[in-house]
Image 1 (cartoon, rainbow, N blue to C red):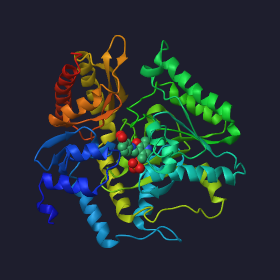
Image 2: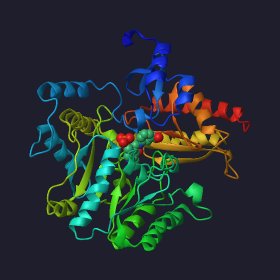
Image 3: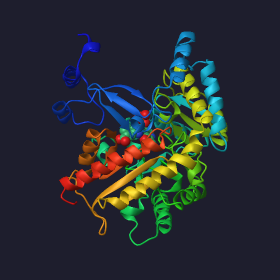
Image 4: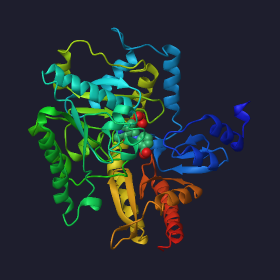
Length: 457
Ligand code: PXG
């Protein structure tokens, strides 16, 4: 069948017959039919019915420089013609790998100067686990192998990354957890803060780490991992006191600090990396998504000088992927970083569009009592939907508030993500004030309709 000539209904039928989607209920998907996205430009995507939709999620938290960058297409074409593939095993390298590693060493903070390449955030985090354990082995402490993560943390979907994350429904899929992974409370003041101020609560949430360390013994723990702002968990930005205290506790107990920068890296919070926004210096830093703005799959793990020097003493590293440092993906990632630099997108988020989005969301929340909390930093935001703002009474899972709101907004031409009972926004860093206004206008209409539908208007 000539796929290019298919219409939406044909595509939907073929999709339902042959394509298993990530994180979807196959029955519901088949009943409703998949949405077929056919092209994109700037901050907008187009579907096979000709609708133009404002992409408030930058693809999947990743298209930082926006769609339609011919420069990235040309870079890929050039690299594919010159050298489409060669591996980085067995004493080989390619120029685009070497140049990207050097570039990353310039933009990453402190002494994070050594990079291992992979193809996804999940693979990067599997690499974090294997390398951190290897590091402690080489240092003569093989019993330091456990990891501490957080509830609602997301670090990917491989078996190890699922175990590292704190998503219960993922753990429950066919008993998908490995031993050696522990989780502590997520630093969400609105949900758990009670009568504490956000700053007091930040310290309290960090103490949960020390309590867990004392419970299982620092001698058994390799590392603590966290996203600077938890993304897939619903955009949980911790109070300012949290990360510095976490860093202090990790140093005190000789535990490696891992900042998962898969969403927060490459300008999302108005700094190159999220750890810089919170003023901490990790020992290990996985990154992906915005690294190539999603134009090709690529990820990396940054290691500090000290870790690298230790690993260097440990003999051969029996770890790697065929496509570690794929030359085309490396070239595109490098060109993507140059765009972010040249167009000043990090500063743009910090000084211009980040504050503007926040100001407009504050206005939005003043107009809609269904919004209990506006949270986030830079160009990532979450809106907690509640039955009553005064009592913080939440919607139940049966109310399905966020999914209802997401579908209504989509009909109005705006993509937002629904997580639990929160709406999430994470647009390209290139978004303009006019496009932010369009997000607010469409979200506002969507919230009004949602509240009416749920009888809380
Ligand atoms: N770490 C973090 C912080 C992530 O957000 C990964 C690792 C894994 O990356 P890969 O490339 O293996 O997917 C992610 C991915 C959602 C959603 O539900 C979030 C992600 C991926 C898919 C869906 O919002 N984040």
